[in-house]
Image (cartoon, rainbow, N blue to C red; front, top):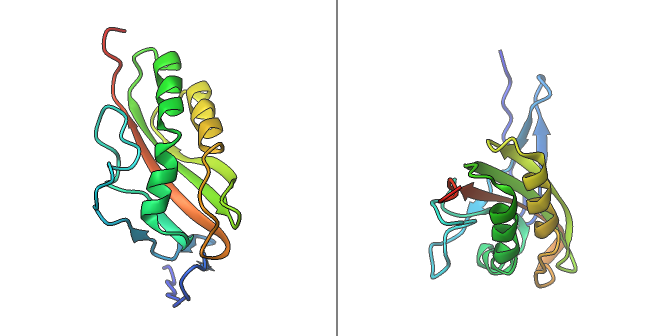
Length: 152
């Protein structure tokens, strides 16, 4: 039997609650509005989710714009290393107060290709964002979907 606890948090806090089973329950992140932005992480196919999720002091559309800057380098990783591989990644990264990426890690993957995954993470860490509106960190979960390479 598990005990579930819900906690109300002020905007910008990435608060966690631990249950007796030591499972982390994240505060529900907001989804980005559809607006005129392409779907999160679209790389020649449909993404895992329609948009990135963000918890913290930065607007989702600003995150989408920042990630758009590194999509070409991410595509380069995929083109160079994929060998026809298809799959999905969910990258978790944190944006520091100054707009730089504090860390990036693979939250989940179906690729099972460490070199490609590492290349993607390296490119994500080069993304730059405007300074945060509030707080010290904004945590982002960013989906990417890689289709099979054509002609490989």
